[in-house]
Length: 223
Length: 192
Image (cartoon, rainbow over all chains, first blue to last red; front, side, top):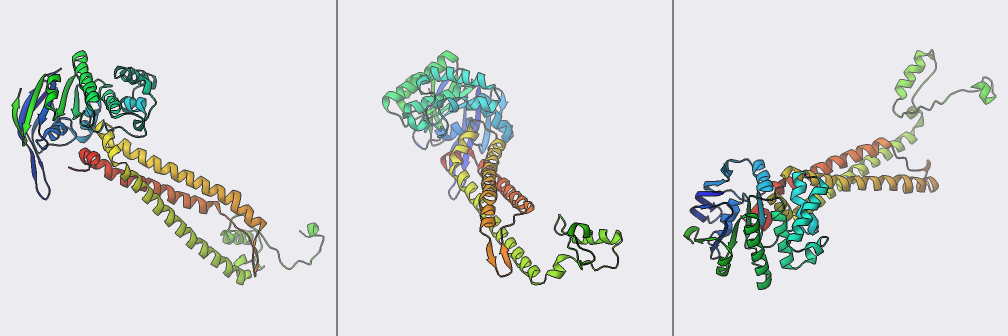
């Protein structure tokens, strides 16, 4: 079991407090491609943010590869994100000043890998996502689908234990969405990569091993 | 001295120019110790009268202008750093999300502020020494007490530069640490 979630709760406090997650419990197997599905406002992205250490839950437990991540300090979480997790966001989240190659080797730079090695490894991954002809292009010179492929390359370049994808196709046309989902499926099958993907498209169900359906912050069903 | 000037017993006073301004007292003490006991020895300000007053006024104006210039430069550094960091809030959030330590983010913004400040200092010093000083030597200001040129003391430049470097460090640190401390989700998407 690579992810174990127990009674996870998230309350956003403010003028009106929002109970986004209401005691969610589930497990994810190593090498599994799991989708978190549900309507808008069901708590999908909130759940992904808690699992990906991007936010702190109000209550509950999250264990990743046997480590209780909620007991980590902020610094430990930062290094855990760098070394063990990868992210693909809905709006690509690329840095506008970095070209494709720089965007992809950035995690290696942060890890202190030798320059020659990180350029070689980043180039290999960029080839895998089919963007070898775009190495020195900036995000604004790429289409939405290409930007998302760069984000995917950046997410998998340091062999993360888990890849989190938050509605990776929400801003893409049908063809680009198909390319991204097929690519995610290939990464999952060929590299035995655990993937947790948030999506609101019921059609995406065919790409994943299991789907966890959320409704109003609670698990509706797992199928 | 007499042999140098070719005169005998005609000088009534000797003017001594010392290298460092403000050390007149030390020089007078040294002369006294060396046996010049009965002669009148006074610092130049005691003899100069109105000139000394004018110099003091110039000094006062210089300090006021220097203070204003530093204040303007420090405010500019703070404003630029603040705007720069705030425009990059989302990028800072992304960098934190992919695992960049917030200390690296803060340090990089301090270095950025320092870089611009050092470039500004170098350009300023170059303008002073290559443009302003030569210009005023060639075209001195005509005051009633004589021609006045621009005199730039290294220590004044060093003090101003030090103020600016400190301002760059503080100006780089505070805005970036404020944003780097923020929740990642809030930095990237602007909400909780």
